[in-house]
Length: 119
Image (cartoon, rainbow, N blue to C red; front, side):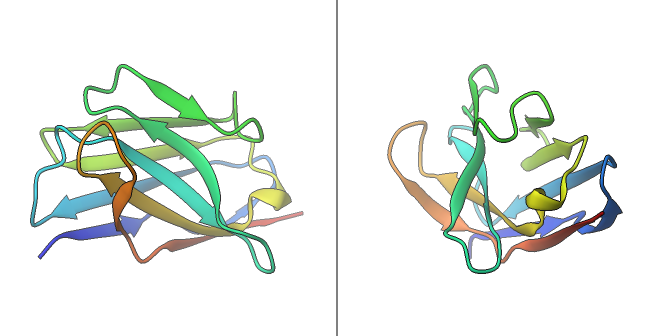
């Protein structure tokens, strides 16, 4: 059974940092694009960042460019999101996702981890 399990969320003050991790099991994702999404209360699910299977190509939402960095360790089948200079508007549940390859939609989703940024 494929599982994506996020960790690293929590409560942090504005300007602080957090590092999210997403551990994959049940299938290797070394040939798959992976990404992070988030959903804040009362708002729609939104894209945060993605990374190609090799890690060579990354993409970010404009709202997080220059502050967040996505990375992956294919040896550990793990995805990361380093979040710096956090703002209250970054408060959301963050979800890890994986596609079946570098193309196509995201087929696998984690349960999410809460990130709360206080003023």
